[in-house]
Length: 98
Image (cartoon, rainbow, N blue to C red; front, side, top):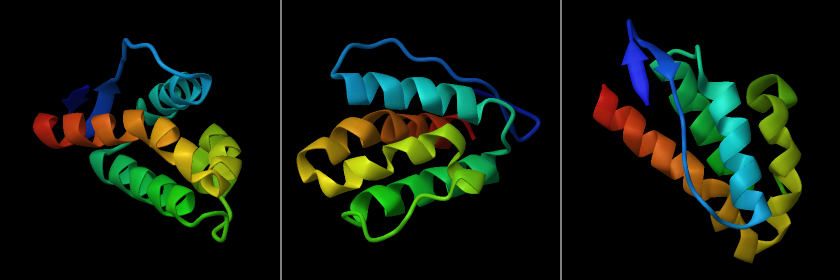
């Protein structure tokens, strides 16, 4: 993660995992670039809230973009961590970069 002038200038990842974790990381990396630090923190928080709701909070595509497609994962507790792992890593990288 590279942050310049308060915006995510670059985000990349390299990893292996299940299809949910890989797809989630890919969507996140496309979504995050160009966002301000505050915007990305808000999006990560919203994604976390949706996934932890066990299907009770609907994903808003206006906020999450393509990441709203992971809304169904919330109903499968064993898969929530798969979808969240790259988002947690990005949140940590964002905190370290700022």
